[in-house]
Image (cartoon, rainbow, N blue to C red; front, side, top):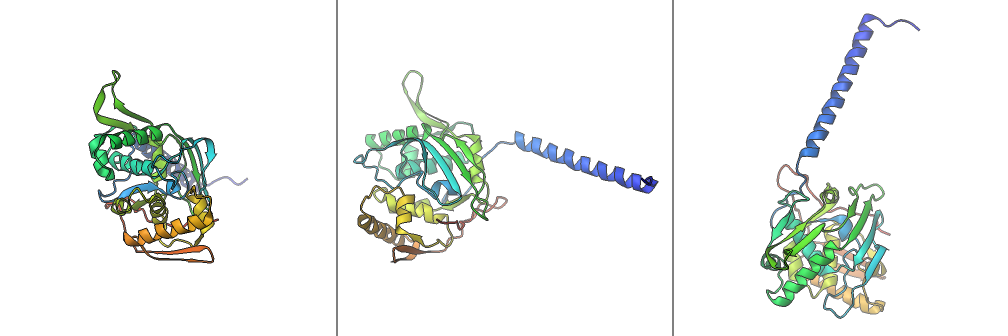
Length: 312
């Protein structure tokens, strides 16, 4: 082999030094990031953030929470979702009341480092949710928090052609405390979130939505609340079959004619609260048109825009 000239050797040495410098810089930045507090995106007070993977399926079902329908317990259930999202769930069935509480906890929790205590008063949480301030609703709130903490969720997501963000494995709430070791009720309840849940809030794997619209829909219309969350993750929702909506919402309606009626009522409710412009059901395919929304994170953070998704 021909010997390298002095110039070639100098160039090779400079190149090696440059590569080593880049590697050292990357390691240093990675170490710095590891030391930085992990927090959720700081969306505005009049918005709520949610992982697309949680909104695009039956993790939080559309069944009513009036006590008339017993909640099932799932042992490693494969949750119905859109294509590209895989969720395995263990725990008691979660419904829209649990989802409202979870959204509020995420909202409160965005101001704290993940893994650190998130304190709140039960009164403040009930006001946030728009629930009545009475003994029954205090108990209702406590039950929702307990359900959310007694869960195990495994999420993987990667739709064809669209990266939806990282995966997650853990509880929706790491821990929840409302009384001390002596059984005395705490003046402030405390929850903790797993730091790794931040992976579900990597751009563009989450969406910003209006809590005012969700409150206006009301807890007596869980299917409309589910649809509001689901459709919030799509700028221009794809046409979807009535049967697919029945599956994704985990509706308890055994009669499809009854579900079609409920679906029409729910979609009409979304028009009434100013979320949808119009809808039509043709040949059992649901077509909806949203009123445009342009929610943004504060300057310096990645914007979370609703996206389209692959449907099956």
